[in-house]
Length: 208
Image (cartoon, rainbow, N blue to C red; front, side, top):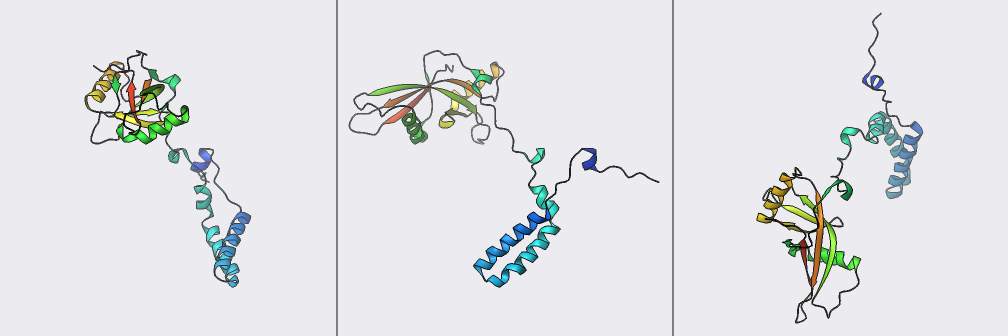
């Protein structure tokens, strides 16, 4: 007699997903009640019976759909833990300007969540945060672009020569395409003449 080889599920120790008939009946009846309430009560039992038959035939697929396998699992997010990432030295110079014009509302919200209302009598108020510098590999028009985030909110980008020089420094430190951290200075500028506040973002980096 030829021994039948064990199935893939048995070899891998995996148990075939199952769903109880009672669960199928309850779900079928629920659908029948919904249809009956919307159309006519006489449809409750026929719809429930037809639905139960369909569910019974497809029960294996229904059960399998509820189990997430490693191949369908969501990819892990990039590691943004400050403990496990490189932090650029604190120079106290804040000489690297971030292109922040499109993100003024986001920066304003960030500032308002962390401090009281700005003193309107003061021309400028500085705030220091820790910024994440994230190489943006998804931009087809600028392969050097660096996204700048504070509290996981985008506050601007490094473009052009600044971004290119920053990527060169990443390569020198063998950190190419990795997320790094540095201090960021947000300056609240209160222009004269009753104009709206605007925000400047400066990074504590030297990009030569």
